[in-house]
Amino acid sequence: MAYRLIRAASGGVPFYEFDCLHGLTGIRHAVLTRHGGVSTGSLASLNVGHLVGDDSAAVAENESRAVGVIGARREQVVTAQQVHAARVGVVGHRDRGSALPSCDGLATADPNVVLMLRFADCVPVVLFDPSHHALALLHSGWRGWAAGVVTAGLRLMSIEFGTRPEELVAGIGPAIGPCCYQVGPEVGSEVQRGLGPAAYAVLSLRSGTTNLDLPGAVRLQLLSAGVRQIEQSRICTSCRRDEFFGNPEVTPILRGLSAAFLFSGFSVISLGLLRRNLKFKQLAVVEIV
Image (cartoon, rainbow, N blue to C red; front, side, top):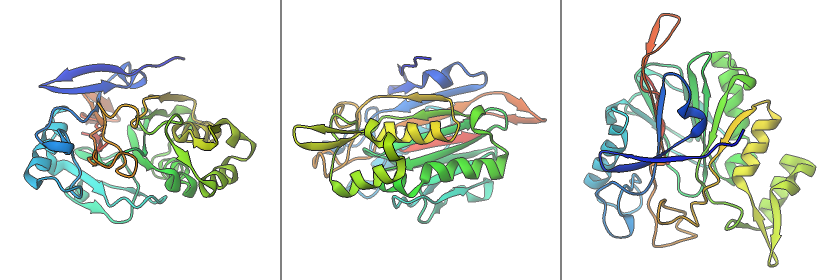
């Protein structure tokens, strides 16, 4: 099935919606851009990164605007200190307002919890289990991908929530694309080790350099695990600096972190639980209330 991102705006904050999630009963979501915030200069305007030289008050306001798109509050957020590894943690109500150390994925089925991760050019991955009303939010750079962060997220959801891959709805968000992502021998070797012969579907030679389709590599991992309903945005954050921030090593003057995903649901009733506000944000926010 062919999917496409849908662009809209709310309260002066532009966003995209995943087509595959847009049609699900009880779910409302938004994929945020770099616009609609208060940061200035090279960080204009919806930067949500605290470690890129931005004014802390501006970042706080940007986070409030991002979370406010789906009617949530900043104090509901659980985030992580991302390290490009494969650790995924399950969080709940008592974790709100905290940051899990050394973690690149968060999962929950707990009401009133917002999950937030931050991205530049790395791949945001959301996994939603409509049968168990559970979800995971993953941050996958090439190191995390090679370490198995996608597999770790799937395994954790299976153990904790009883999730079956064939029931999942997966979204692969804006990230650096194969048109722009040049990699060296180390990365190429890791991809070949992880995918075997299938690696040639995501590695290509362009003008004497090796380019990697990292979102495509994430998709292959999901498919190999049995996930069938996958939407891949196919928006390159490096090509679209007008819409998204990116890796400072690629574009040094654009150092912010975008709020790319924000998910919210409404009035979903299952097994007697009222769940609202499934959220997710580049920043990436995910919540079930």
